[in-house]
Length: 208
Image 1: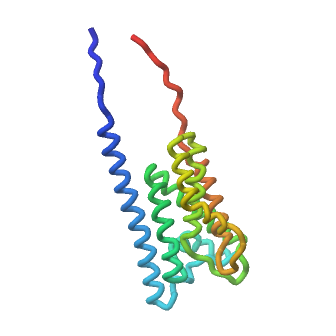
Image 2 (image 1 turned 90 degrees about the horizontal axis):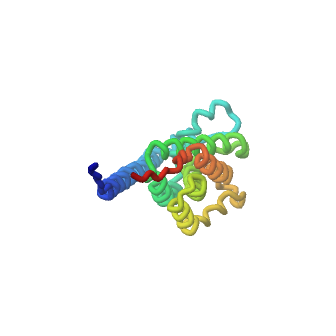
């Protein structure tokens, strides 16, 4: 007679979830702390880091697309981005850091390049709000793309908590880069499709 062994994986799943949460929290706290440190350096050097913002349609400015996402135009600016970035980034990073890094890089590039192409002349755009909008878009559609009910519920919760941010894609304030918001949102939605989870083949029930 064959022996059948049943293994309880619940403890392993709980441990893995806790580890992912700690890692995601550490990553996002470090990221937000870096933004504040960079703003402190910028303030101490007379806004010297602002030169790394994106000026549109200048080929030399393409190299600033990535660093611009980590810089801000003052303490109020970095403060306004810190909490939503921390919360949305933490939720997104829970699914795995490799996927999270790919999503963030996609958002930064799409948002930055969109700004470079469409922003008004003689402007400099910087800030993490493009990433915030990208993570928002990503979390809103991820569950539907992956067909995972739990992630759909997370998206609904994110919509209830941060859905009002979507008004930021409209050109209502000349001092705010709605272009960065809009292209960041588009980058997040695109990333949900680019990096969707592969679907598992249907399981076959075998009886013995």
